[in-house]
Image (cartoon, rainbow, N blue to C red; front, side):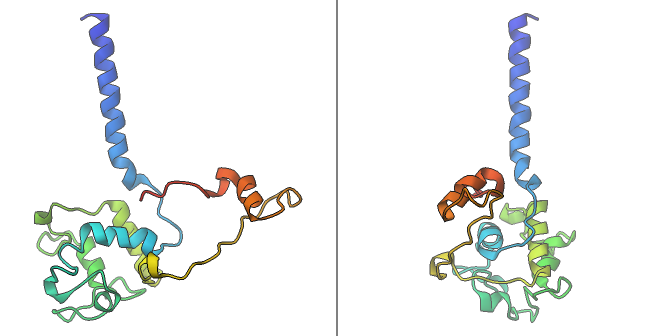
Length: 176
């Protein structure tokens, strides 16, 4: 085998390994301490659940895009989301079961929650399952400027953000 072939094979193997790592990196991301519906939960429900439990289709007469439906009884009488109670939350029971017939999303949908997504939903329910309206309809909030160690340097909020730099994650991509 020539040096050129060996080098090319090594590069191909390295690229394959990097690609596999990138594919799995979404499930390795840390779970937020405080789960926020619009940032953490709405995208999971939208990507994995709303196709069957949304405005077009309402399997079991359950919509996971509307608060009243998600927290109210479904056709079966069970409640999808019971804030603070995993045992009574049918959504949790369905995403955490190992029984193929009860597992959500169903295999035939071609969708599957990552372990991280399951953990985020679990934490959200445990934290009280606070539902938010769509972000576009929420009132604007003025976030507090970050605290800086050198109090004299920052004369205003913009200075505080600049001084904090990447230490607080002000300008980071959040996977949208």
